[in-house]
Image 1: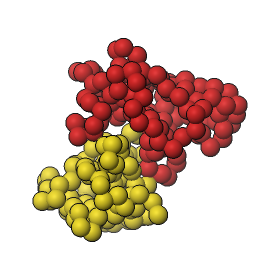
Image 2: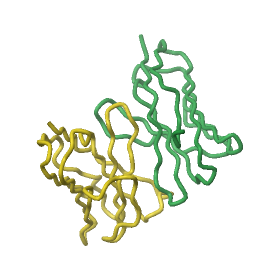
Image 3: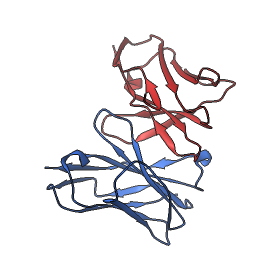
Image 4: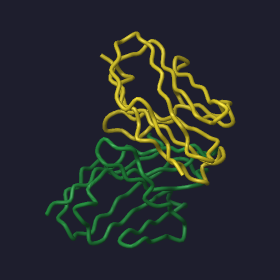
Length: 114
Length: 109
């Protein structure tokens, strides 16, 4: 069984640009969650997708948006990038929308906004 | 007040020592509790779940006190390979993960 894969691994963008990050969930998992981890901090929950619908969102502005596809892979889109958006973006997949089944994390995308 | 608070660290300890991590959480409705380990520039990995009865996995022991809203992790006979950041994680009422900022552990030979 394959784990969670994220792409790209590293990315440099300019303030004001838009970025799309991608995540392929672990085989058999139907739920994907996205997290932002700033340097020296714990991950912060952005949102979760279950069966192609957003079913939970953290304290992030609307310029953070996402999609989940029929194969349960997912995208995170960030518009109008700001310097503070520089962080490690983590995707986690799980079986079911409740985390008691456990999460599998991808290795993350490190975004730098200059 | 942060939802999940951990010792700020870093902890610098000699190899073979016992290390204790503490964590408090603010939401009494939290249902599940975990310790994750994160190596530098890597993703977090589940170390162990934490149960009210306490649980042990080799050199690692986790405890939960729901009344005090307190979680602990004890590492005995620490190894160089234990050097990492340890993150305390609880779930909210929607089972979303709420993370502490982590405590960095440095084991010295």
